[in-house]
Length: 538
Image (cartoon, rainbow, N blue to C red; front, side, top):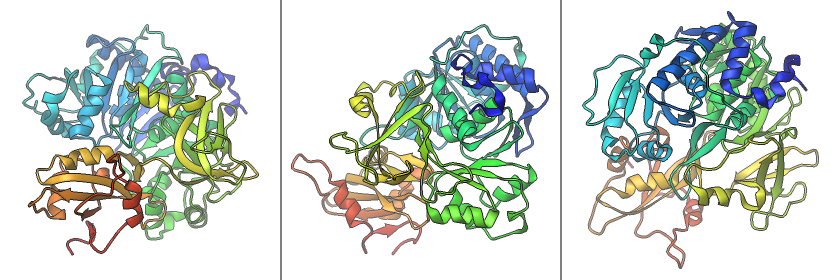
């Protein structure tokens, strides 16, 4: 299938952001490309021009092809302008979670070795706190006017300086084989891993939306998921660029504004993730629920009760279940117009291979039997190129020439895949993969804590994935309240990584080789001695 009849969409030679921007500037110059709910907008012509200007701004700071440029910005035009310019300059966009602070933030900035960080004034305080631990960063570009913080060695520039540069085409050759982006996905037994994403890989996220969710130039894509994740940045905004449709970007998801925005901007397609669907369905019914143009929503996960709620309440024809990871793209989609409640889809076999295997032997499992999802790409450079600076983790993930997702699933007789559980020790909360290691690293630094283990606890919200529980051993003779521990964590952890449950124990269960047996902690779950942040002291 060729979307809108354009064979160029399937030609890898054109699979780079700069080429897409130029093509659309020529074909659809005055058409709105990006609109924000805050009132900002760019046409396709303007997006192409801004990309050139920002690339020249970066070049004035000696950014060359292959150099990492970190971006810590919320959803909005500045994020997209920086992305377009970084790509045009042949540099590598490092997408940084806006909630990161402390060791989370310093690890990312040091791992990618970026000299330049593009950010907003609200992040400067967190940056000042970790300045002494940063090994490569030299320059901070700030998105709006602010008083310069008291940095010891970091220099500060204004984002708006890019406007002083020429919009003439930038002479840097960029290939689909070149590295486009580094996105950080949380580790389980170690720090977050930087996924190395070639241009072909990022493009296929967008092309997957076009091919499998039938995105077309006449559509309007409503984007509420964060752009520092692949879903918002590539599956939605990049897909819109490739298809030539308008993307409407909201600064941050709001359940109460969701259907009203969709109606106001006449959006026809959007994506949900994790608990977003549950939060939307929890809102009081109103007149706008059926007065809209929305025909398609991509959802992950896709529990039957949420799919039914979206169809029945809002009248959405196409609820498309899907499955993927930053590392592997989106190899599975359900078929628009063919409800398959609970399934995360069938294989997009034009570009990917997928099997369900025994997690111990890697032998393929029979149909309807649970095993681990393993994936590989048919398209050169259409997959991650490894984990940045982590060769051992890269090799471990690529065992027997397949990427091992760590996710358990089954495939039915019709080829539809159903997610079952996670094999690896990762916590997923509010659409974020949370590293238990990094939570433990922060809490272990508390003067009263001897040992800590972070594990997943079940969430009562449908589709809500996990809540975070920490099991803590205090130093002998020390006393600490759960509320005081949480207060200690708040300035050091992203909000999505803050524990909901705290339990103090005398010892952690361990193996003979002194490894914590987290499966026993998960099995024990919430006990009468567990403190619940949402319930308060008890």
